[in-house]
Image (cartoon, rainbow, N blue to C red; front, side, top):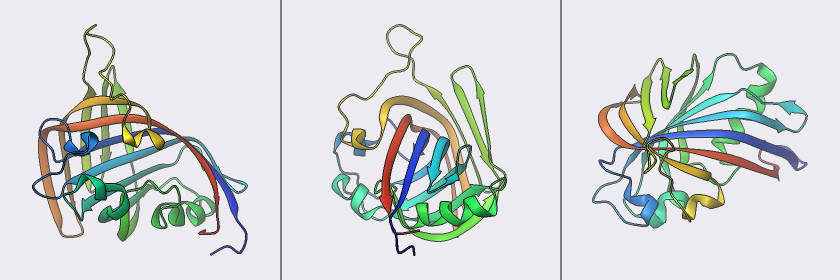
Length: 205
């Protein structure tokens, strides 16, 4: 852990799918009967931690949430695996690992990390459809078109707007995951793509 506060900034896109059929109740402050599960890709298009450039880093969190309460989502989060693209340098890994493990942005749902793996992560886009692959999981989602049949539907005035901007609703065609004693496969589930632009200072590196 650093003795000095290190400045950090991240800007990019967040891709997320969960286990909910229909749109996830947590976005509307509604509890579920059971805790949910979440597959998330952080695409860091621009970023620095101290003097280290982390632009281009891809990181996936797969989270098994602890609580079924909407109010607990950000505070309690859940446990799961952290996957970082294998092209990252040793210097980038030195900072990216604690960034996600120590929840430095204050908005990451992965509160207990079961393990870290450096893997090949691919993100392919064809029109309004996005396909994310890694050795332990896969997700395919498309923007849900709005009234004009072109632009995606959005979530306005969301409580998560503190951390995420321009939340676009998606249909997740499928997502699956097999690691750390979890073996999940879902079809036709909730999905969101959002922008993030966060910065701060922390000693937790």
